[in-house]
Length: 221
Image 1 (cartoon, one colour):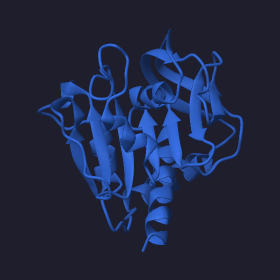
Image 2 (tube, rainbow, N blue to C red):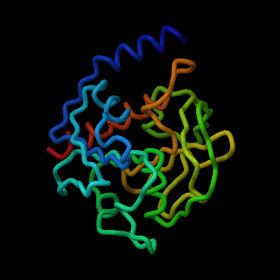
Image 3 (spheres, rainbow, N blue to C red):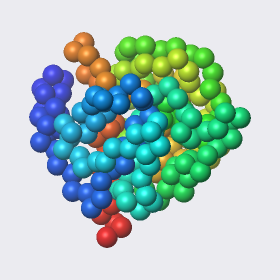
């Protein structure tokens, strides 16, 4: 097992993705205004071409300028929802997307809210085990039960309309969802975070998502 992990990490270190357009990274965490976020570091480690948009400063990509979207974690959805709970035009980046979308932590919750789910209190910090319920390309190379890093206070109260549940956490929390017809995914965990105590399988989920982006991108040309 250790040999497999070492080989996997070596492969990740030399991965080069051929994308015709960059991935749009929607950064929702104002704490990274002047520093590099961990999701950016992960994309750089994977040598992925991306463009950063700080949504908390009103930065958003032009439609058609990206090969995929990653919607990061954070604590504020005001770039996408008004104070009365109504959606802003910016949610169309998700709902009208024709490229793969990945929501991470709050980005996952954001996707759920856009499609009719609500948030309930459930604090999860550190390592947990996630169980795969349904086979999907995001789980390529992963065991049925895998380790991920959590850092959140809320979770979705239900699987949103038009979505399917792909994986759950130890407490039964909704961990991975996918739109039934579109390549729109949400993961409650942080694939870009972790420590040296365990191997973060979430990083492989991120790798598999970028591979999916590359596949869709190649078919569009």
